[in-house]
Structure formats: structure tokens, C-alpha cells
Image (cartoon, rainbow, N blue to C red; front, side, top):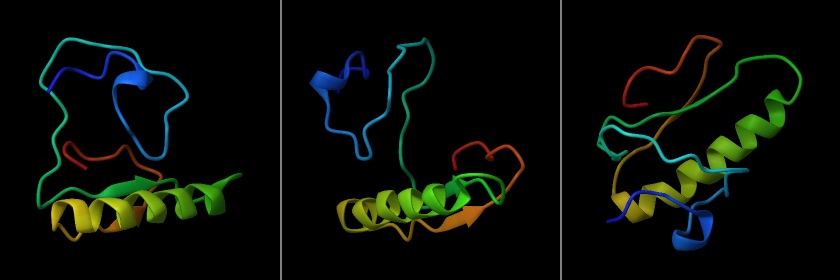
Length: 79
């Protein structure tokens, strides 16, 4: 699969505002993948709803649990 070089080449939900290609390992979903959303602050409710939407679409497509967790810390590697 080619890297995400432009939004027109891939279907990503929810659609990001922009895409910047970078060097490094490709992003991959795994059984331990977690969607991390902000725990507080302005927009927290919207972020939680968006995280749940993303997880709901990923679950049947991957067969993974894909939990959604609220945290104000940086997302762990692989989350």
C-alpha cells in the first residue's frame, strides 16, 4: 500500500484536515490499538464522539476491540 501522500488516494474516516508525508515505518493497526481522545477541555465531547465513530468503523473492518480512552497524556506508541 502506498504511503498516505494525499487525501484523494485513500479513504480515511474521519478525514484529516491535512496530510504530510514523512519518513519512517508505516502506520498499522494491531490488536492492541487504542483510540486516544483528550480527557478535558473545550471540544472534549466532540473529540470523544469522533473517537467512538472511528473505533466503531475500525472494529468490524479489523476484528479488533479498538477501545476509546480519554487521556491528557501523550498517546502511547501504537495507540
